[in-house]
Length: 266
Image (cartoon, rainbow, N blue to C red; front, side):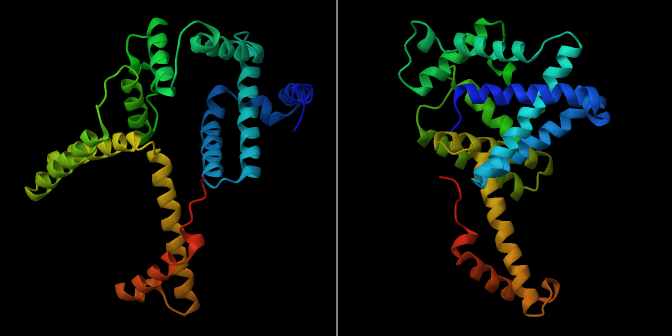
């Protein structure tokens, strides 16, 4: 691993390159807050993919891409005389110190749950009127639901036990089933949303990230379906001409292959 001095030299090198690109490269010179935004989101998802695959080489590359974006935004901020990279770093350092009074103050926090509750109390003292103000409006719905539940649990708005959470899941499924049986189309979407919300809350109690869990299932399904496609093609068959029984046979074969359902995390 690199020394602290080497790490600082590498960061200084990145800042120098950013200055040069912003001055000399037509593409870099043209970029704005808005033009970079969707690229930053894309890079974040690419990092997420690399993490799920536990591909350390790709994680390193994607972290570099995100670091470049941070430096790029700070460069634009400095050009507008609003802030520079030092202001960005100092701001997050100041926030970390304020929000960790159990490290830099005299507050006691024995568990991670104690820390989270302290955070929410501190954020309210910082001027927020609601603990939910820190949840970005543009988050995907599943991630947003997870963050909402994390936030409110931080102020003790929570279930006493996981059993109660599971009962709530079953209750919401029963309510959805009733609306489906009654063909009450106007209520089905709302009830399905309640099922999702309660399942995400159950995942929190299980200490499982629902986004990661679903994405792993997505990847597993893709791998198995592509095996089905490859196997059918090798036998000179087209999926559209196959019976469900034939496809089920190949599907079961895919399920029996270890690398097509191995969890790459942990």
